[in-house]
Amino acid sequence: MNSIDFNGLKVTPSKLICIGRNYVEHIKELNNEMPSEMVIFLKPNSSVTNELIYFGKNYRYEGELCFLIKEQKIVGVGFGLDLTNKEAQEYAKSKGLPWERAKAFDNSAPLSNFIKIEDSNLKDLSFKLFINNSLAQEGDYNLMIHKPDDILKETKSFLTLQDYDIIMSGTPKGVGSYNIGDIFEAKIYLKDKEILTTTFKAK
Image 1 (cartoon, one colour):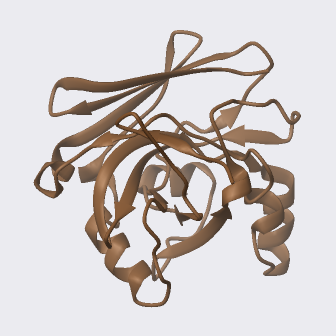
Image 2 (cartoon, rainbow, N blue to C red):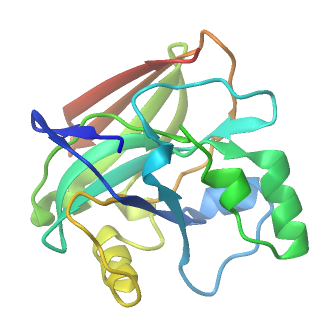
């Protein structure tokens, strides 16, 4: 089983709960319909990695704030990339099929380490993703259609959450393809204070 670092402790998420279409501008950039309810899909433990692998020209990155669960509560925050086979996703969408082939493949969720966060601070979180020193994406709590606590509540209504499962809260506008050698640097902020930085080099 693949593990992540949470405040220096190695922990193992059984699954990642991913939220699709959670930023209005991202919905617009992909010409998707505004969903009438929360869009939820899963990535398995085998998707978890601390490396960014280049899978090919049909794959894109989607940067996201991620939340670590323990005892049915959000206890940590980190950064993740939801790697997507865009060709497979477009085909699945056109046929009304599940997204697993596009989203749940091995090593499709490069993750940072996670640090502790208080529930009262969630509203002050934001992130920026730089690729080769250029700003590619930025998002924050206020831009989310569904907030972290709402995602947690909705998920628990039909799915058992194990300790150290992860919520990937959706991506803002700015998704795109990437190449071998690209440097991804993500920064998470609490208000204006940088609290976590992580770097991936595509290989």
